[in-house]
Amino acid sequence: STLPNDPQYPGISAVIPGWFSEISPMWPGEAHSLKVEKILFQGKSDYQNVMVFQSSTYGKVLVLDGVIQLTERDECAYQEMITHLPLCSISNPKKVLVIGGGDGGVLREVARHASVEKIDICEIDKMVVDVSKQFFPDIAVGFEDPRVTLTVGDGVAFLKNVPEGTYDAVIVDSSDPIGPAQELFEKPFFASVAKALRPGGVVCTQAESIWLHMHIIEDIVANCRQIFKGSINYAWTTVPTYPSGMIGFMLCSTEGPLVDFKHPVNPINENDSQQSRPLKFYNSEIHTAAFCLPSFAKRKIGSK
Ligand code: SAM
Image 1 (cartoon, helix red, strand yellow):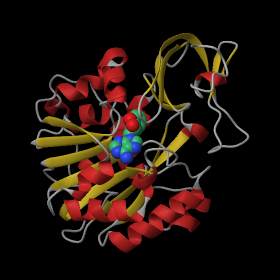
Image 2 (tube, rainbow, N blue to C red):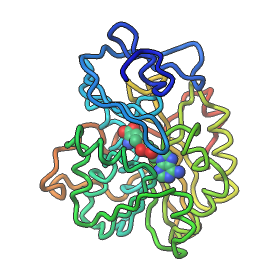
Image 3 (cartoon, rainbow, N blue to C red):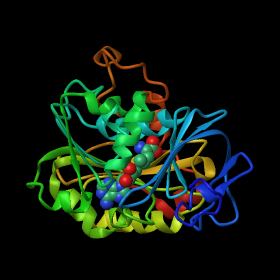
């Protein structure tokens, strides 16, 4: 059914005369809207409602439980930053784990790094992978890299079975902490990430907006300070179609060789990305700039 207000599809109830409005209790009193040209897909997986529509100005849009996950126009600002902030901060990353990220965009970016030998991904929802392959070929292209192994399952459970010290980097490309991603923001999860990393290994997790979710960020920072004994920093990027137009990342390293996230040691060599398109958003200057925080956020988050 595509009837507005069908309780089976909360996302679709927000399509009011030709516009998608992103209404959620996570950002009360505001809702970013995009003009809809055509609804291309809607379905209900075991975990969430999945919708794809063609917008008039941001290309195709992927929506999970009524929340925009990516648009073709601005996905670069998220995928490139969540990937290259951690991977350019260490030399020679070889083994990388992605949690979530079923669209494949982070994989596409990890694959630019020639030093990487193994890319594991654990996404809970196979429908996200299938829909991305069908509607977002320039993003799902990440799955085609021969170094990639996909596990469909819960990232929390996956990490429990990872032998200690396996990965150089873990990237947590999750949805918001309402629904299947809730545990990905909690302390036991961070502890298993730390265990899965080698000494001096790095993690980058999606860490919400300083305009909307400072309390969530403060909790994440407090948890990470207890668990990660290396560096702990908050960075951010602009994504016009995310609530408040920006999103942050928590970057941490485990005890071992010190990681200075603000000064990348492993710049991307454009020649390494043979088949892929040039970087649209990331560069070394924006890497360093991403750690500069507005005063109100700096006071709350601090950094070490
Ligand atoms: N890469 C995206 C972007 O450009 O903004 C958006 C986020 S991605 C689609 C978030 C994914 O995390 C979703 O596909 C969701 O199914 C997945 N996810 C949520 N909870 C999870 C869990 N516990 N384990 C593994 N994946 C999870």
